[in-house]
Each structure stands twice: as structure tokens, then as C-alpha cells.
Length: 434
Ligand SMILES: Cc1ncc(COP(=O)(O)O)c(C=O)c1O
Image (cartoon, rainbow, N blue to C red; front, side, top):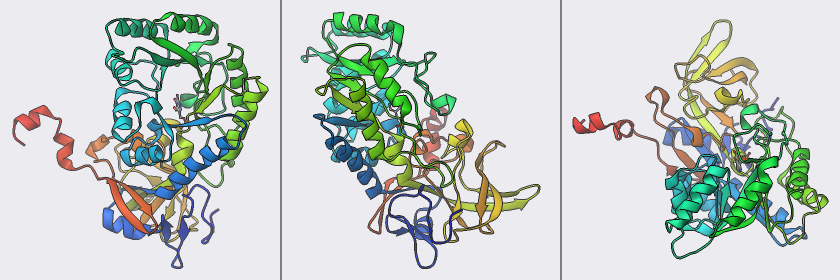
């Protein structure tokens, strides 16, 4: 239970309760933020993003290896200000679609610092990746290799003449996580099975214009144990020596104080480096990791306003957002904390419900709030990853803004979607001049 003075580790670094018991994020009073920018809103502590990026880079720098390339998995928070922040810090960027590639380039990532994924890349997406010259194109299947060969034959590489590629393998390692975010098991839609990997490697090597640099594996997300990374490194090592090895993302984060604490960034990077050394992978092999969640989940909170409170079997506290700004509880049964932003430490059992027309639209099933009333501002921490990214317009709800806070200054980096934007692509509405 969070006391009135202690914040759970799910909150952004340097968040605090002020002398009145009101939550501050990035030096900004969350009650004031709610008043000024409205709710729901994603509030990001900008310095938290930079600190985590630096922690990854520093942990990598301490190693005997030449370099550890830290690649931000942009799917976690594909917002230009977040991407710009990580580009400034010297990270690379991982994209999984033409849209994410566009966002990364637009935010200032040099093409050669972009890694392009996807188990179903379209011809258009492949042309974009080859044309711009991404740093690594990750090969996922035999159809794709064939398509790339044809596109290169048609001149898709332009004057560059070569494209670095990695072969993605599924090392048959299952991390302990939700089935929907486990990707390393043999029966996965991602990458080549271990048995097919040698053929994939040979095929990639045979295509003129492709330069096979190494292997890639991403075993899953929200992993709290580091052991699976050890097994994944050993599996990859069994496929031979390569110049590059990309071990994907997956480090878990704290969603609540009650959950077991995840390994720190330093412990995780240390374990990856140990695993690679144990597997006998040469010190010259360039290592890449692709953290998403662990760079941004805990950097943000979501602010809501209570619209109604009703008591039947449970006490239902309904707020002005829900599954349109945070799909994770519905998708994965994810558990969050909630607090009244100016009255922490509550003990009234409540169900924090969203506003959408689905009984399953529940943000926190077992919340404990301090006698919540209509008009109260509610905060849920650890919403920086896969919240904004999966936001949607269900029930015609405009998507929330993203507010960056730093040293007590707040700025809107994504504004709230307007009602007009809800019909802007709707041809019959536009043609009717409405
Ligand atoms: C290929 C790949 N890399 C990196 C990530 C990021 O994972 P996480 O956010 O768990 O660090 C994902 C997540 O789905 C992924 O599919």
C-alpha cells in the first residue's frame, strides 16, 4: 500500500507529493495540469526519458565490448517528441511498418540508425526501407527474401548498391509473460524457425545487393526474469559467428508497487553481456538491444477526471477515458495502480471503470482510492508504453494530448484530437461540406 508520503516505483523518477499531498510530475502540479490541458491526458516526465536512455548507454559503455547499440522500439511510444528525445540522446530506432519508418525519419533519426522489422512487410514498405537505406532490414520469411531480390533487381536500392540485413530467428525460448506478447516460442508468427535458419542465412547471402550482417531474436515483452536471454544468446551462437547480434527488447517494468520489481537497466544490460560472453560470442560482434517499454512506460502517467461514482455490489468510479487511451487492461488483463491525484493513500475499494460501451472497459479492477467523488482527478502511473501507441477512437472519443513536463514547465507535444478530425477522413462528410 502506498502511504501518503511514499510514491510507488511505478511513477516517473523525481515525481513527488507536495506539502499539500498533490502529485507533481516533472515539477508540475498534476491538478493544475488537468485544469489547464483537460483530461484524459498523458503526462510525461521528460527527464525520465533521458535518464533511462543514458542508463542504457552507460551500462553498455562499461563493458569490454566495443559498443552496445541501444535501439528504441518506437512502437512503445511513437510520438515525435519522444523520438526526438531519443534521437538526441544517440539511440537508434526500431520500426515495424512504413508508418513508423516515416515517424522515425521525420523525427530526425538518420536512416542508417533505423532497424526495420515486420512479419508482413508490404512491397511499398520494403521499397521505402531499401530506398532510404535503413541501417538494418530484418528478414522475417522466405517470401520476403524473394520479394526483396525482385525489388533490388528493379533498382530499389538506387545508387547505394547494398543493404545490410539481419535474419530474425525464433530461438524456441519462452519468456514468462502474457501469451500475446511472447514471441520467441517455436510456434510464432515472427521470424524463421531454428531449423530453417541455416537456409535463410544462405538465401540472404545469395542475393546480390544484400549483406547479411547477423541475427536477430526478440523473445517477448514485459520479462521479469533474465534467464531466457541467456538461452536465446546460446541458441543464436549455435548458428555461427556473425558481425552483428540483435537480442531484441523485452525488459519488464513496474506497473504497481505490489508486483515483483523488475531487474534494473544495469542488471539487464549486465545479464545480456554475460549471456553473450557465456555463449562464446566474439568480443568484436556488435551487439544491439531494442528496449521499448523500459525506456518509456514509467516516464508517464495518465490523468483522468471522475465523471460518476455509483455503488452496487462494487463501488464503480467512472472516468472520462478508458480503453481508448489504454488498451492494455483489456488486451492482456494488465494491472495498474490508481490514486486520487491530491489524496494518495486511500483505502476505499473501487473499480476504476472507463467510459466506453463495454463491460470489460475497466482500467483498474481492484483500486483503492480515497473516497472518490465526481470531479476528482485520478492518476494511473506507468502508462508511457503502448498506451498512446494503441490509442483509438472507440465510441468517437478523441485521442488525448501528450504533455511534456520538465523543471516545472509543461508543454503540449501532441494536442488533443478534435471532433472535426473524427470526420476529416470521412469522404461522405467532407463531400457534403460538413
Ligand atoms: C522486434 C521487437 N523489438 C523490440 C520490442 C520492444 O519490446 P519491449 O517494449 O518489451 O522492450 C518489440 C515489442 O514487441 C519487438 O517486437
